[in-house]
Length: 313
Image 1: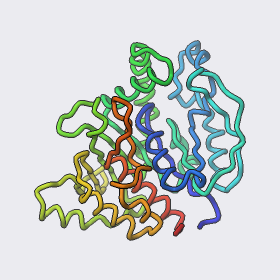
Image 2 (image 1 turned 90 degrees about the horizontal axis):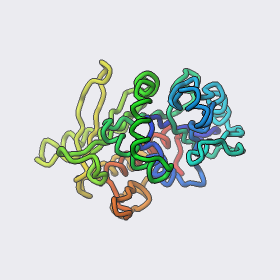
Image 3 (image 1 turned 120 degrees about the vertical axis):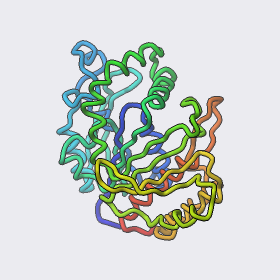
Image 4 (image 1 turned 90 degrees about the vertical axis):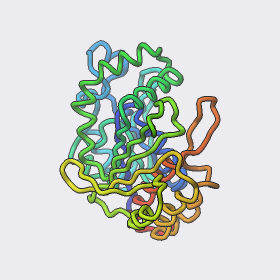
């Protein structure tokens, strides 16, 4: 393995699915090998102060970007940090925590690609871009169930934050190696999280696995639940991998094999049908089910982290 930690960035707007994606990746890599950092902890002001000042948590001036950048540099070089902790339940700050980086560091949050120094600290950069209607639904459910808000408060917060989302969060998409967009398939309702498809924009900023055999299999099949297409993103050519929520286990295994053939460590996870550590989705009645699009997304990003480390664990 490389002599320093491998650093993954996962950036996206509030309730875009960053934590769900992060948890599955950490489980594949082994939670004992992974240090997870949330850049929300670096808010400059607590909830009451933000309300008094009329500033949102999405605004760069509301966050210690210089300290995030400094801490990313320390973690990348294998050094410990004293990390602040923002308590989302109380809206206040808890005592800081002494953090030593593991073999892998996952940094997730709102403003992780805001400065050149921060961007240069990552080995792999992902950006989450679900449709706004879906993100709105996720945020309402999360903040009312876990953070003590009413639905009306969440909707008002979304309206108040929209200008900052447009100005500071969405522009970070341009710096990502992978852009991850979960979306309802076949015109489905955004409330049905179990039937979501995923669209993965694979930018040529890092070497992606050879998925060309998917194109060959598409020409011989009428069922294209997994598709690889050529497209343009911000004017530049990219590959786009789409995986439907109704993809079968057999179709999923084909993509698994492509990833696992290049990184043998992943073989232990290359039976998603029987592997319950990745792709977990909590249904409306509280049961935990599995989403193939989510599982393959987690597996693909893990593949990139392992390739960056040049490691065969």
